[in-house]
Length: 247
Image (cartoon, rainbow, N blue to C red; front, top):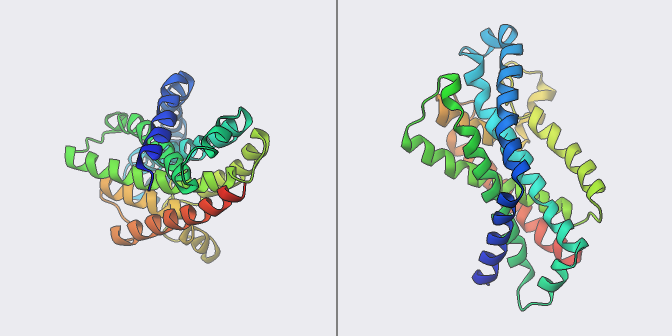
């Protein structure tokens, strides 16, 4: 494995986030708007269904929203690099294609985790005070979830030749993943067809794991959550590498 190449690609993509201040601004404003509008707007209808204060219930889902949008969006760097010739220079280097994909996945997951931490900093606004040990566990969960979702984004971006095409396909993927994850409503008492969709949604397990760590409410077990998210990430990476080679 070409670790130096992986680290170089990871570092380059991570630094790119800090050069685009609008992305950091968006990561701050998005959770505030969702917590204020969604939390307060649906609180009267959802309070009894969740059994706890609704803003606390959806907070892990807001963190999950930050992760999925940032992770998938980070894969646009592949199209950007292809468009401006940087990817061609990387391809002629003595670097295995799998190392490029892994470096991109690590870079995207690092960006998403940093923005997830910014969102997590708003926890006291809804009355949540995670301990240092909880924060450490949440960071590890965010890295695992982000790596899996970034691998999905790379799989999509590998077959796209334009930003417009990637945006259309990614939105078609992101929105169902988010709304079927239980981020804004409990997964209990759903119709059978909806339960089946949430059960095959990897983000359902990621949000459930974070909700369990933040407010100690689980729908699945933590072991099921970790196996589902980790297995999905391994599958997406295994599919993304040959797809990237073909492109």
